[in-house]
Structures are given as structure tokens and as C-alpha cells.
Length: 114
View (cartoon, rainbow, N blue to C red):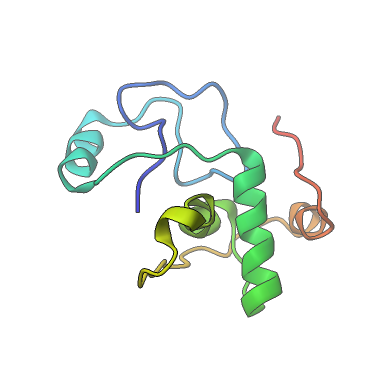
């Protein structure tokens, strides 16, 4: 799986509640170097991609995922066609999400950032 596109020497345009833990305003270059050595590729996830991952975890497994925790699944869902027929795994790590934000995401919304 890939990290988000915001890693390679780019500042993020804003900080998102759903990307907490996977995007920061200015990534540490030491971390970027480590990730680049092991990452096959880097992908970008939208707010809606992440919200869809949060919803999928709850609807399919009844697990609560924060945005950062749902990002790997959101990335896999984004590459569904490419991964069809392959054995894949994602790790859900993080369930710290505000109850009001979670309710809105489960209701089908993508809460606005900021």
C-alpha cells in the first residue's frame, strides 16, 4: 500500500480531521526518505475516499475507524480493479473519531474540513 501523495516534499494545503495521523503541514524529510525506500508507489486520497473507507469498515465489519485508520482500506478500494484476484491485506489502526463527525459520515456525508 502507499502513503498519501502529500509526503514527497510538499506542504499540505490544509489539515483534515479524517487525515489526522497521515498528513501534516510539512512532513519530516527523515520520514519521507524511509517511506520512499519501502513504498512501491504513492497515492492521493480525497476526503470522500477516506469517508467511504470509514463507512465501509462499519458497514462490512462493524468496526469503528478514524480517517487515518481507514486510509489503507480507502486506498485499496480506490484500486479495486487493479487488485481484483490478488490476495491483499490492510491494517485498521485507529478508532479515535469524534462521535458527531462519525455520525455524519455514516449518514453518507463528507463533513467539510475547517
